[in-house]
Length: 149
Image 1: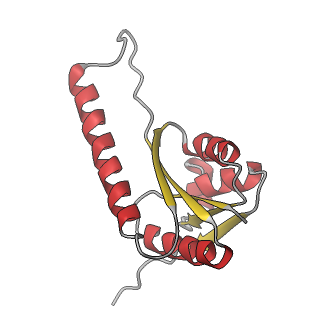
Image 2 (image 1 turned 120 degrees about the vertical axis):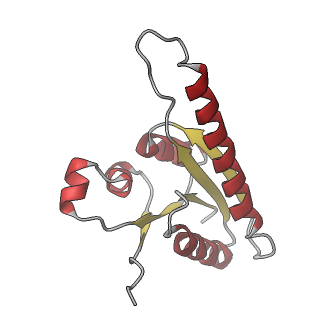
Image 3 (image 1 turned 135 degrees about the vertical axis):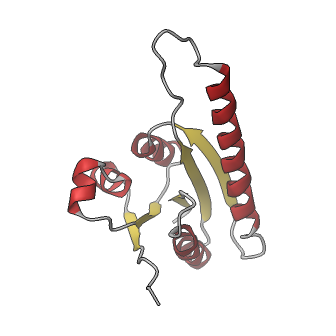
């Protein structure tokens, strides 16, 4: 195993997914490609690139997501793994699968939020989409909601 793809969404699940990916990367002397997929550019009827206020908001959001991914990968320094961090805009399943193919990954490590059947029917599940279409193994790290105290 040489390369592990780790999609992150900065949810509560990210720490557990990252921890598992680092553990595997160290065990197999593999590199990690960590990706975050930002929302695609909004489409506006009658506008070429959307109103300036929307473009500014999207640019701010994208810069913040870049900063958070850089912060996350910097926190992995000194753990004995090489991490490449990338941010893309688009539809998560398609982008994750495209990056998996581009980097010729041996494994995808991602989380499952466990929202339930109704949520997945109405909204869909990125994990489910990747599981159904990936050409390499996918390790799903279960994400348990924080317990109420």
